[in-house]
Length: 108
Image (tube, rainbow, N blue to C red):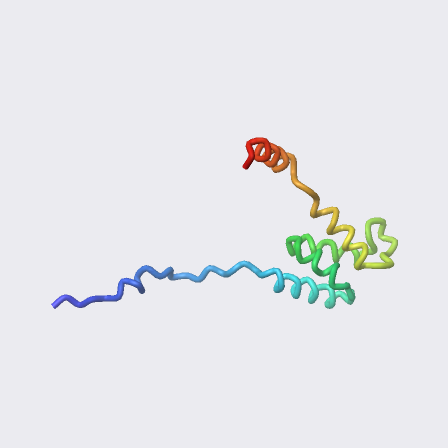
């Protein structure tokens, strides 16, 4: 008279792990932050900011609000932010570049 309990329910985790934010959700989050601060950024700029971690995108938007690098004001916020995004999303680091060179030389 053994009672069978479902084994599947015992193997399920007891806590929920949040899924990472999708690129589209991140883009909406960055757009909402820009609108909240009164910036009307173009789509290319928003895509560039969405590729960065949110705290960096927020810092860049705050920098525009403070007047740019020299605090004299920013004429074109979208262009200023796009240039900043391009500077931040540079090429490979030294270690990655060396690893890539090794992989190419080995024919991987």
